[in-house]
Image 1 (cartoon, rainbow, N blue to C red):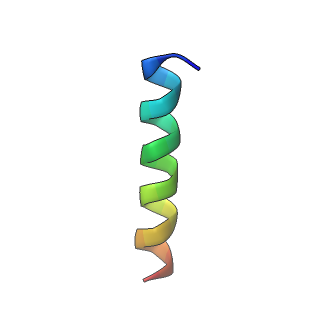
Image 2: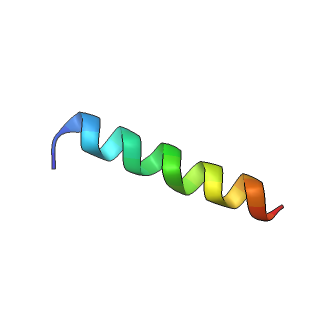
Length: 21
């Protein structure tokens, strides 16, 4: 994975957690 892939993955995970809350 590149830094961009990791960043996008983190954003997606963070968004998912925020949406669940």
